Image 1: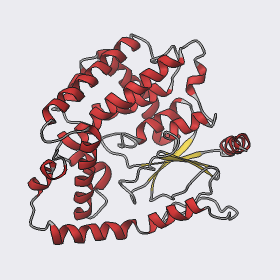
Image 2: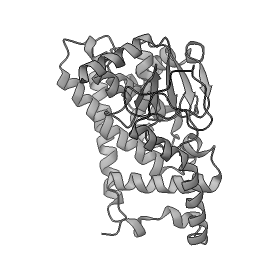
Image 3: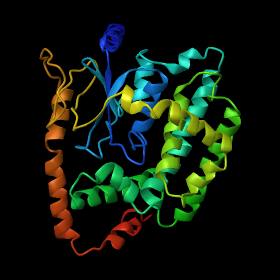
Image 4: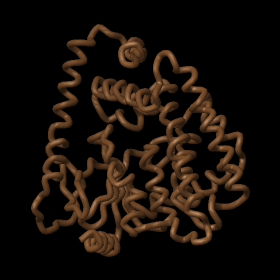
Length: 337
């Protein structure tokens, strides 16, 4: 049964002349400024897959973005380890398979380092260190300001909890985060040397992950960023990023149509592409019986804006007298031991 489903999914991929990447909007000179969406875009580009980009501004905090639609199937960011891992597991698209001489353990360990140490450092700078303007431009600028401010405040709290940051250990955690990021850059610089890619002469998923990270750091973070300054100490990594930026992104607008519209939501694979709200219109397809998972997802989409409105009303009624500086200092309320 599983093999038949995998075969059907692979057939959908092959039959789809162009795929659709649903991502967050462009900003800072990048085709998508979302640190999660950018590696997926680069993975498709490195694999030379033709695709269109559609921008989803309806659900700025949704963890299923980015996702890739092909035929009647959808690969979500919050399923099966993310879009890239999904494509690999389903044997649809696997850049790593082109490296039979490279140790899979070496690739996996490097992947893990980028996905943890560097991702944590970027999340820390984006949501905790900076003044919030960068995250606002990427995620919340299309929302009414009260909703955007509340969602930003909530995300900052979530990131602090994820990283284990409290009011008492903030300085120690910051030092640990930056030490790990520096060690990761050192290891990647040594691994890369003067090569074009991190492993041999062709790309892997690690190249896409690191390129997405580094492009965001170099283009979106301010010059005062500790993470940016640490990366810039490694000339070969910076040259690596600039080389592939030209190769992969400079002609993106001409090679893959960049559209901006709220996008549909879907569920498990193989899946019917379902529309939610205003969306770009795919070609008509035969209707299929919705699964319980699809119905649940559609209900979540339907009530998302209503929940945001309720959040604003609660915020205004309960916290109306609290200024923005007090909101920023939330550790005492949320992280007391």
